[in-house]
Image (tube, rainbow, N blue to C red; front, side):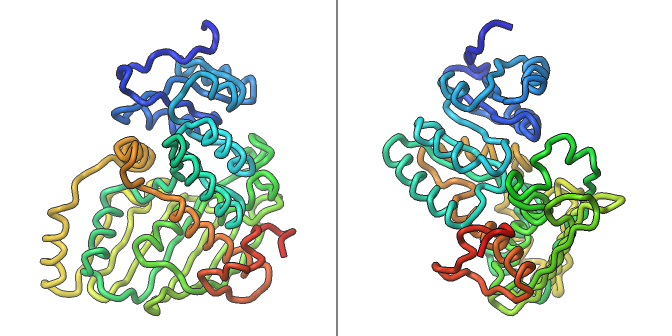
Length: 369
């Protein structure tokens, strides 16, 4: 392969030129970009030489070592699939370069950092038009879209109870493959922030935000710094009772969400990494509620799912339309993460939203106040 020059995108000059940084989950992002109209992946960046060479061969794209190298190729969008601890600095550098940014979870390691990025993102959009979108891909699926539409139309009524289960499997080789995993400094936490975060986002996106949380965490599956088992209970604003359960010690992987509303019970798919996709079950408590739902669903258009769905919606929103996932959405998710770790560490329930001067806004790790 010749030198690291980003070739013209296959979709034509009008396509956004995308560079993906990090060749772990970045491979899934690249696969999704192939299905996005209006954008083309033109280069990748990876610090590890073996991974970099493997990505270049697998995708037939220029492969460079660093984010700065990638920015020098003149990309329009940077898709960050890097370890969480470096996200804030990398997002800032890309925005300062006038480049749109897509960033994997967790966006940053504290609510204070999220506040700082909000200032940087607002300035970038004002001066260069560059925009930032956090990844929350589980919102993108037919079942999730239909459930959200019922909530927005008022068909569901009050929430009675809801539950979210993230039952995944991570063995020793998962942590050996990338030593930053399972560490506070590199991964910013364990299963709460790295595995269950998207499922908890989907739970509250449909069931409503929590107003309190009481949590327990433990390390029982692998010898890591961070938790691999977690449970919590909480309330929504209308009094709904919520339970959260996550582990990386499952023999059979699955993700499952259930909402019992006043007028309907909604049950997600159970695919571990696609709970937003089909099949979802909707059981109505009355013919009237079912008829109202049918009317609402007439306006729900099929759309791509997971990363493809979110990335397509992002491209469609540029340059100035409403983003499909915002920094405020990421902040709400990180606030729940903060409450989870704070409660587990202190043994006390945590009220939400957190006060502006709450010390946990500076970070949720074990060395935080």
